Length: 81
Image (tube, rainbow, N blue to C red; front, side, top):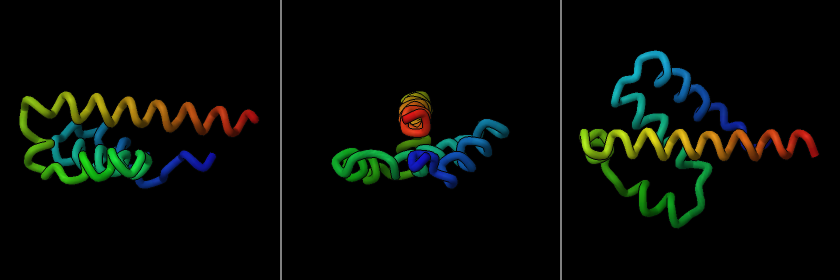
């Protein structure tokens, strides 16, 4: 289960409880760790305030959710193998 990243899961749990924008950005940043270098460089350069903006908030949440789902799916596949 190498793809289970403890700090990403903790950030997700905190976000799921309070649904706050600051915790959304923390979760997004934690999930970003599991992405490829190009994605890390491109999206890691975005400021927290940019990720918090209303027009980007849903995109930030959507990306974090998709990354988490993919990461967890990979961990389930590797634990079955």
